[in-house]
Length: 534
Ligand code: SF4
Image 1 (spheres, rainbow, N blue to C red):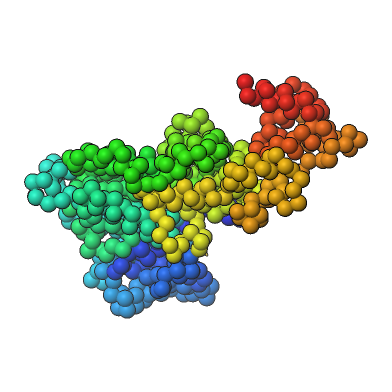
Image 2 (image 1 turned 120 degrees about the vertical axis):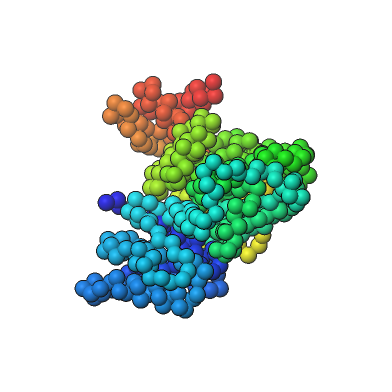
């Protein structure tokens, strides 16, 4: 048992629903108790789809458990096929149905339905939503492509066969799905980017694909693994069985987009992209070089997201915006190795966890000036009074915007620049609040461009400068004594701009603890400052 209030991912059958709902012509029969239809709302309200997801639930009730639930499953399958006439059928269970073991997939396979049936085995008590999505996409493609797999030892066509066939090269875009972060616009952005380089798109899947499109997957010269959480296993399988090479660089950010294009062009035997393309096509490089961005240098940022977006964000933050990454982590256990490697490059230890309280604690400890995270981190950051931008699923309805808002490619970098910088205090205001602390409106922590709402709650305000004021008991010293801030220490601390105050407080306390100093005065604070800047 694990006490859980918030969860980053749903159960794996929600991942399977994402695949079915992203596609056309696929229907999903889900053996599930009454009430599981809640998941429809993810698609009709968050994604704002104008139709129900293509899912038939068996919706068994307590009284059904005394009877033959397997009959109920068979009836539901037959009704779904008769009514929706799908081109492929997925059959699986939710968590509760897994316990009663009706084997709905096997039942469907034995029913002679006249459509390809994919029986899904999604262990709901050990795996989660993204795993469920990846497994469903993989099993569906595997089922549909079975007959096309060349015999072992057969020659596989190389990625440059387009030249012999006298056509443009073509690639598959794999991984975009509903409830993924900005997938709709990422696909549009990439289509444009590829077209500029003379590359056609063969199939986009699962988003918008039909089963007949999946049958054409092996016709591509390369696969672009855009969302490894969803498309990783499928890309590896296509590579193993059809010899289709995979580009695994995810084009989020300037450096990654350039690298993605270089890799893809080299693979397909195309002219390498121009070095200046990024500067010509995206505004991020100039915006982050322009003098107004100087104050962004060294801003401490905490990143927690799915692996794909966390790794991309760490690279953009550290190499393209000049931030200092002070925390990096992900809830994607399947990609933990990649996140750990990215963190190591930054001299950090990755936080791999799906416990939002642990993440919140790490966030508080790192005392960042900006948080880049999921909806969960947005809540945590709000509680701690830290500016935040959402960069990954789990997402809320605001992150399925009406406007064009990709993350990938050149325009994606523009969107990222605006949305990450927006929550921060603007340079002039930061400077003025640091200089004049007694304004009645532009008070400590006020962000006027956000309507002034984001005052930080995390750091206690300073005591007035009065030597008679009692010292503030704070944390315990390692020897069990009590560590205290004197009024002069607190007053000096209050002069530190609010967005770095948490970090200074923590450093000073660590310094005092190390030296066995029980009372933190103004001098202790400056000694600690000198110590840490050495
Ligand atoms: S079966 Fe699973 S998804 Fe459905 S209500 Fe129970 S715990 Fe939730």
